[in-house]
Length: 470
Image 1 (spheres, helix red, strand yellow):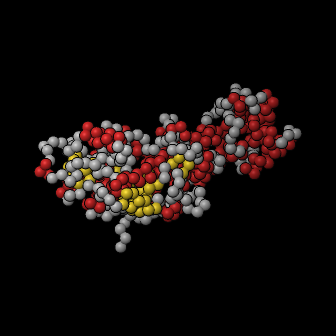
Image 2: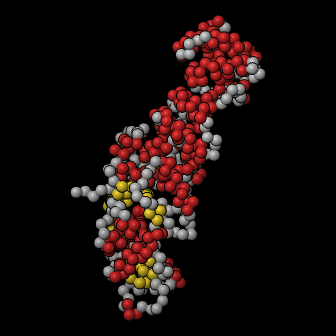
Image 3: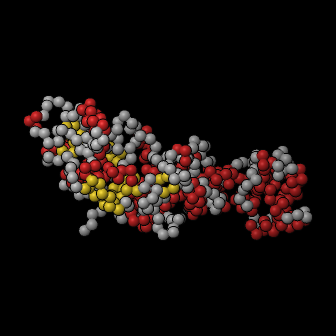
């Protein structure tokens, strides 16, 4: 029987949730969720100087926004230091590790001599094969005894077979002289103890895998399946950095990208399923596999992100979209919607969703239902409300008072009125937009009238016709 899949996401809490880290978390989440497995979360907080509770909170909030739920409690790596040290001592007892008493000065002197003689600066400890009887009463580190010859082969689901000569690997430190474990040991022990079956992470960890495999082998533990994914690059082909735009998941939330759109876009960033670009969470969970991950770095493209997000906004359930708008307003420090605004926006979403690519665009297009009478036109809309236009609006209002409030009837009334005025409806659209929304770019005039209802529509037209004094 095949063991259940267990994946993990293990960020360092030294800042925000990087968009590259968010994609790594997503890949692990999709792989586990699509196979009925577990997705675990471990905070790698062994670097006490740089780790902060605020950064941990930012990571948790980022994952929560993206909808990447984890199983079980969040594991703190720092809290498991004694277990890590226990494994280092077990390796020592097995002869797979040794005590090294070399000082930093001695190690540097070794490297300087190696550089001068143009040989490898990889430190070779004189204590590797020393008789324990010769050990001094002095501080020491515990080092892993790496094989001196042969090769280590990483069988990677993305990179293929990667071979590293063992003479290229040093005897890495497992336990520092103060008794604290190093990150490279902690990762292996935690992954083993948490039952992680698949390690899916950035390819900047590929060389680490060769060194970490030595611990698995020495302890007689089963190796996980490795999948090292290429990093994300900017549009110019260079590693994604601040100059390319936002780096933190929280910034994308504040820019108003919907979470479903971000999940879809990040999934497609380095992974593909045929030619499919737009897909649901259910499809992503069903389709995601390691074979679909490419070997080349993916390029972040804001235009593609916006396009995908626009499709997700259009396809979203109204109630879910309203909840996401509520959360967006909260994280950006804006006033929450009033009950009346929320109700109006809910009724208007059918005519706002189709062309909006971000949540701010939904709100801007929905301005007509979020504002109150008297409507204050912006500079562009105000130009459409000259004396002639206000006179036309004043003449139009009585024609609408007895109209049955359906799109068909409203269109008929408007077209008849335009004909009587010797013009076309298109000429009436600008002053109507200005009167109803105070904006030049809006949903269709008829959609706004239907959402606002008869009384509010006539109220706004009457006010605009009076030049703001009605």
